[in-house]
Image 1 (cartoon, protein in one colour):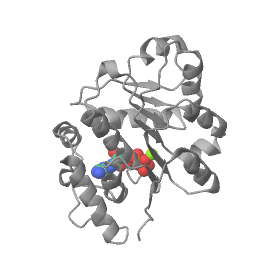
Image 2: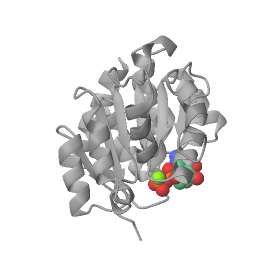
Image 3: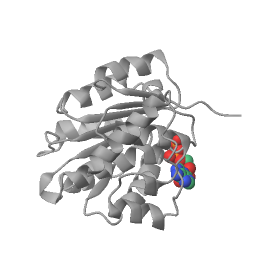
Length: 236
Ligand code: ADP
Ligand code: MG
């Protein structure tokens, strides 16, 4: 099955001292759904970046992942792909509600993530929305409850959790904390903790960061269960 293939690739990468499996270079080498492969292809994504090679075999098996790699290394696809694949395998649909949640420090980064999500998910049957403030909170409120995947900034997300009638995160399957170091630098630690308290404990969590600071490790301890640690250093 697809999960067995991902597990075998993950085992390979452990056997080779944390390096990714040798035979893993292209998205087509991964056990991805036809829909995701078609989305990647039409966005002209072919070869994996280093963080994608290292992280995807683990995250595709459903494991929690703590990933560090510098800006521009392709971290977005490293979490968007496993999120979409997980919901696809669960046959997630509109009536199943919120299945995936991506938290991003800024509006601009959230919009970039949303664009990548649209590319990867274009052939899938999943709904996705942005909760980023700066828009009318009532307009967002009308649509938030129909979404399978939300990309959100912390303050606006917590506001909807507190104030939007019917906002329901109890079936959430996947949580992503992107740019965790920036989230914490911007003073959102308390907000993120409050958000996590509203989420089911049984879920997959992926935390990505450009740097691994003390406070990132604290957040990781609070949000991740038995994670795989992946750190990609810039190569000369
Ligand atoms: P990060 O989050 O690590 O800063 P991004 O996910 O924003 O990096 O990716 C940086 C750029 O690289 C984006 O323009 C993205 O489209 C591109 N990119 C990511 N993965 C790939 C890939 N596998 N092949 C080609 N381009 C990629
Ligand atoms: Mg990023």
